Length: 536
Image: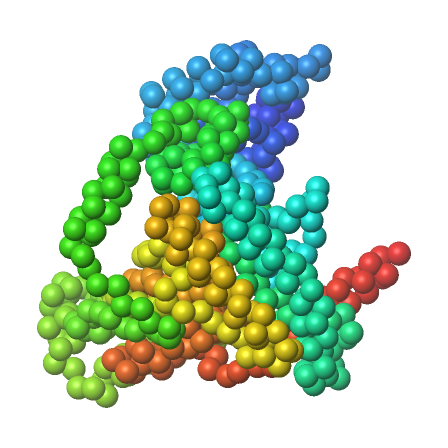
């Protein structure tokens, strides 16, 4: 790449800093093998200096003996950091050269194991700054006990209440039934699914296993334990901890405290302000009281649905205006007035010019589509909400989990002969939930199976609509969220057919969703094996 001549370093300097950069002779390079907090503070200083980042590391960081020590051969090492003095140094850099955004320059990975699915939602709720990954009930079986106990959260308030024994009995029953039904479901799926002659036994078995897990995973409640891995920056973690402390849920607060303790070991300066928020706590309390005082009607509805409840009536003209804007020298208002006078055929041609060359969902639709927003209300099983909840570029909020909105009954469970027991299980959960919710509505959510419906709204722009519906309608997707994606596309098609014409939403149905993906895995494994053989 052409540009300024890369900086020159002496032989001794090169020896010291070489381990921390992918190269020393180019203008583009990656920092490596440095503690995250050093990289964050280094970049914060970088923004207020005329020095290169490599020169800054030499002059202002490595030269600080409280931060770096040296071995006998004059190679810098951070293995003997004087931690207390180092923390003070980071604090001075942050105060002197940064603001809140500085905390976005240092990131780390943290594992949160053995948390409930309910708290898993809190951990994965952040939109910016944190990338989460959760253990999947689609690929992992939950039929094993650890130290003689199934993996569900024993919520202290419930366990210590008069409902504790019933709660324990119900949770264990769910896991017992799941454990006995999994092999039955797997055999059923294999028997009723036509074999694809191009699929290996491994691919077919894996796809059948995923299908069987899909059929049963929603019988679990939100108390089922899971593992969540997070990668994020200091600023996002600070706010996450604050939200956990302020949630009103004791498990969330405990998890927040543990996250705070562990991050303080590696990013102390970035999470030091995390604390319970009087605003968040007060807002929740005041809003609960306000809503209760209104005696708002609660309409039970045992049907799932996707409803387009609002959209910008001028949104289409705004989108077309934004399509033209970067390629014009007219003002936005001038362009919008022009777009309003365009005949329909010309508007269609404009949309085609902007979108028709997309070949697949990985060709991202342009930012012009962000000028049209839709608001959907969805009533679906809680398991489906958890899948859609992973999307970030939208506004999504749900109501408290309840058993008042009905539940989904997979037809395949009727075929394998467990419908009666399944419905009995749902009824038992509803009866216990009703009792617990009367005294502790937040904690009662642990009793609700994922099959029960919950209500939530989603507000998103047309560009994110492309991403969400195209991704979630893919052949290998879970049938539940595929239906949501398909219905969302059909809803906006009624209002803006021209803008949905170039969306890659798969409207088909499939018997064994994961098979094609498993076949691709086989192809990759075969290529890798061939490559390894060729190298021998």
